[in-house]
Image (cartoon, rainbow, N blue to C red; front, side, top):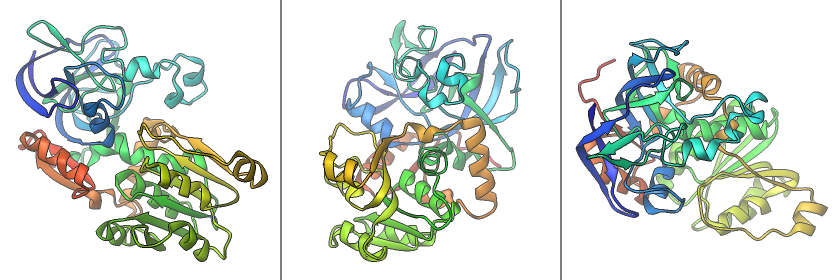
Length: 371
């Protein structure tokens, strides 16, 4: 089946939309999805640039939403016509999957970042040559084929154009707080970077009952939105020492939790310095940068902890519906971070994301879709 897809031909190249990409046929546990929309994530840009090892040419995209148009013979929980959000693939049978931690799937890299399907076959080809995929999904396409485990069914009264980023950016930020850090009512949290992931983490801190929810960024417009979405305090770290400001807001103690979404060395280190004794910082950006830890004063004497979190330690089939319920209740207004772009404007959307002009670009792949 020929489809239209946005292809990155070589490392660092722009997206090129092609209409001659051949889509792999259904396997028994696959579903074929008519794509409605897809968010653009920092991870897409990281792979486009080559910050992570991947093959080229490649079809990126991993925040897709769409409607199922075919199902394989072994598919049990999905049917034609279902509205779905797409997320990562976990094998379901390794030790960590069986423990209920699919983000730590022992086959995670092979299944999501190898450029081929879990069985080693090509997801896409062009004139007989393999085109790599991402997350066993590749949502920058008009149609894709994914495993049943990649798809999360959502209610069809919701706007699919808004929902795709729930499968990565929003579930990563919120899950880091709700699933990993697990603050208690009365705890305090600071989030460094108020992009989509950071704002999701910040809203999750508010949902958890944190009495101080501090947003740190260098863009005033984003800090204004952070305040609207529930931040109790905001800090522009371009002209204010964030660590000193956080301590001033917490009676000199520091916060119980920090989340860094920037991946910038100095900011990641500041997120550790801003912790109170016994506090935990989660560094969750896709970045090649490193940090310098004071293992004696920070980790030992002050009993601070630094944790890495993949995809918010989420189980998408549980966490995505939970976020939708928070959204329905007015507690998780993720749609206020989004801006829609035509599929053909993918390079402009990606550039606006890189420049900080748009928090969460969403590509409208099917312009005829209506709720």
